Length: 279
Image (cartoon, rainbow, N blue to C red):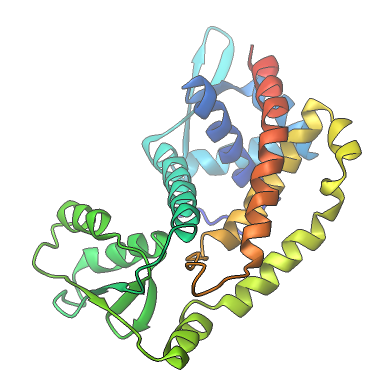
């Protein structure tokens, strides 16, 4: 059974968020059923909805359960743990792109060509999925590009998928200004991303009010940070974060600053609440 998370109000997506947060600061992959039920009240999820989500997550292989004495525990399975590690890795890659954007760009594009991978090779799609997480975009059939040199990560990926000698990596330049602008507009979808970032900032404008943030209770910070993270990163993961010399003014910078500032303010409350409920 394949589980698809379609929206941030999904009880299953919230469960993974809770397990991920708890794991990141405690190193533990399991939580008591009683703690989960209490935490999910912050998201207005009743016991019936939570138990159904836990059942679905167990059937899909994301979670497993066990008992110690009279207490029921749920823990991340290998599949579930892999899912949260994948999310965290994508956040890390996005942060690296933000860092690269602030550096001087050498005007070179790094590309990979997949002509030498057979279309039926089961690892081809996996390779494409992974380079997309790095910010690569499809330039043309079999050609993917990024303004940043990711060859070390690409080589590691080739090795892990046994695709050595099946992928050609190369560098290229666009000498004409028009070519660069077309790449930025068409390949990297900046206009679409701008609209999504604008919507994100507009929908969360109330959270710029320090008075509102300072009065939030611990249990209120939990669903707010989840909703923010889901909304923001589902845009940011698609953002290659182009160099400033290509895109000097970018609403993604404002959105990222807003997101990470709020996270720094809300995360302590979230951590305290998770510790209190799981103690």
